[in-house]
Image (cartoon, rainbow, N blue to C red; front, side):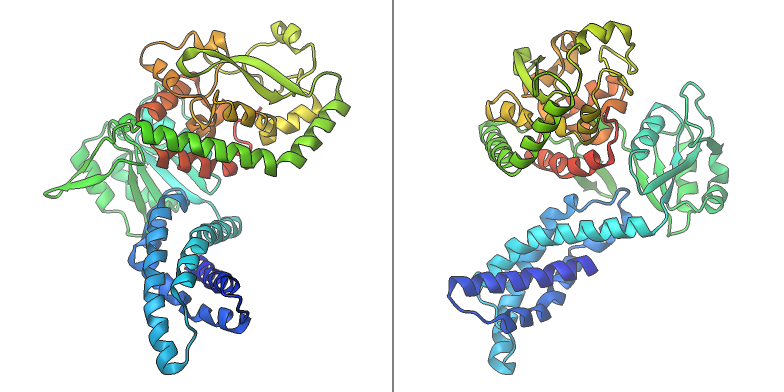
Length: 451
């Protein structure tokens, strides 16, 4: 609420100042006086349920709320427009005209998510991690634990299940803590804030009874069956008291492809312009640190499996390919990755940690060989081993970022990479692309799986 109040206040002031500039009027006092309408926006956003939704969410993020923020800002501006007219007429209060109201919406859609993110970072830095307990012990539970391990503000205390599945190796940090009959006691003992239900083999009626007995302060999330078919576009419908989740179809029509390509061109072009000083600095650092070209080019499999030359900043010494036989890959599947690769230069190690080595791929995006968001681009011999349902990844252009980037990058097993790429293509949506772009910077800054 504090973030929204601050964002709304700033948006009102910026909207008024921009409106005054258009009308060649300068009255800063009137612009700052419009801050008195900020509570209207907080009230409207509260009516939209944004504050209760944030409390129940497992991972803090403002992106799922952007649609409601846009609606809330629009409604709040309309209320302010009409209310300010009456207040100005009767009480000489600050006036907000139609242009200022529209500009306030534009500013708010940008300012409020930024303020929310800033407040979230401050709160997470000053408070202890939220304790999470997983109900289940099989493959899906292990996948959930692995995903939660990449969220800084969460700590998985362990899992609970009546019949723990010993086929899957759980990390020591997430042990089996007991059976469902002890669920309430375990929650109290470990001060659990959030319970995630992930495919337990226990009796569902009994499990639901134990979950209902938990105190209201404990939030509960359920991983749905057939989760591979569900995306952020899926909706929950009510069938006479029975929740039903729909499977949103892929929407790769002509308009969608046109919009996606437009975003690629605008984003890549703007990125090259804004990052040009960084590009020059990196090029100089590479030249000074080791002999060889600044850029590294390699043949990768693109859309339809067709080869193209991907461009990256060079991060290895020139004899890297000759020394490859001396090393053993540390990831499963056909991919070749080494955590502490001796072939990587000192500058290259920094570039890889920060993912700055991938900036030249913006040139591939402009050329139409890649997209800002898409499946991971594999080298030709690796992509040749991808067959069957997983080959759907070749239906779209490979991306600079994707679900693999926001889910763990090189730490993910190869089978999980294939599944994520298929899921992205089979359930593509423009909203999903925007969500991935929104979450990529925070994942990059944490250096998850970057080596």
